[in-house]
Image 1 (cartoon, rainbow, N blue to C red):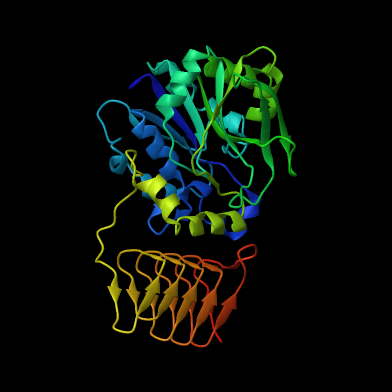
Image 2: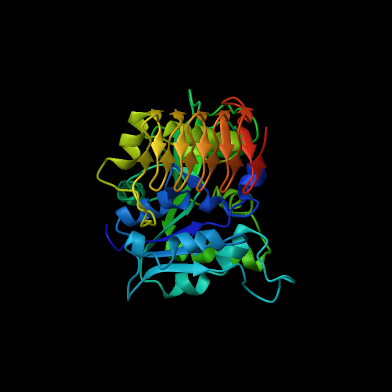
Length: 377
């Protein structure tokens, strides 16, 4: 299956429910699990499937994303032929600002890339989903079913991680052919939810994009998939592993907390399909004589002298002796002073929490402190 697919990642996606988390960064650049970014999971899944030709669509606030992925070296994509292609948010003079207004506008900017490519199939996805899947198996089933489009989905029955119900749901027959698809903002009768991962022939995607451009269509699902639903054979592919969808502040918190569960960590990171990321040449984490750490992820360069429980501490953060961090996410270069106590809290980068400050939320409503803020008593 190697070299039969190329990949396109929509890294310009937006979600207002993420609020200040994406004020100065793209969703795809959101830090996850102490050292990763959201885009690492889909990008690594593509690389693990042997895909060597990948396009990355950007839109706004993409500086940190570009700094992270760079030339693609960390993913084995810094190559003389093919590799990682960055598509900036400027397409034609038809937009007064130069910034594309929709996913279809962004895909329009990839037409030359698609037409020059030699691969027969395209894997199209969004970077808000944390998972580890075998895309070669998905392609095999796509070919076997003689489908025009195959859509990856997962069963939301009993799902406690992804707290938002809005999304595309589907019904399938006994052969997993999709018989109905609809968008819903509430809990749906169907338990099969779209993961925004699609496989189709490259020539079909080109036709769909050109038709959308000609008719000024903007939305991939409503304007492209649904109008062609009766004309195309659309197949489902059920993914049965862990799925974490970063669709809100609460969901972002839950996905990170899931990484403290051994079964989730083993599935995502300890199998035959590694998750790649940009490496940092930092010193190992340092633990003081009175440090107490349990069930937590501590990244390189951290200095831990206080108490850390059920938490994720990103690179170069410092927890003073006498400070208590529980059930929380502390992003890079955070500082928690002696006497401070935080629980069910998300601290963005460079946040400082000074002595005797107390922050407490819940798993459904974590406290969020924006980048660079200082919290006093």
